[in-house]
Image 1 (spheres, helix red, strand yellow):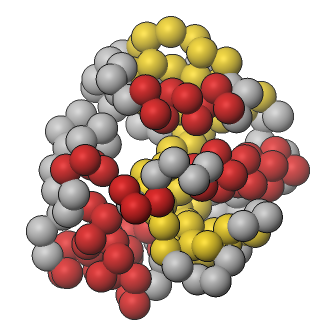
Image 2 (cartoon, rainbow, N blue to C red):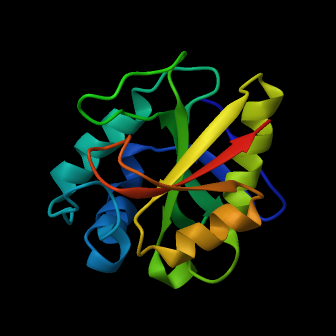
Length: 174
């Protein structure tokens, strides 16, 4: 998986040495409360290492799950660009859809890192031929919805099409 840079950030593949940061990040309820239909905090270093292994397993020229760091290497969060799973009973209307998502450490909230990292990944993905990206946010996750708007994503309203849960849906076309 490639490394992507922006003005202040470096997005790079996760490494085993990042397990401590991932455990700290995802053991916080305020970080994971909007992740998935059944959010849960991470409890052990072994869980972090297993999660890093799954993140590294994505072998695709466009998709990935990156560790977001500042230019001087301080980890701040996670950003993903990957196929989005449809809810039970939903059928794809063509090629699989791709989602973008992020979660950052609370110490890094409010610095514009999510917007900057997502913009860098979107520019890279659209430059590689991806035509459309969606973002799904929990209806109560106003911070991520604000990031979607700053990215120029179009709000499409509520949907239950993904993850077997109700989300606010946004899209961006390349």
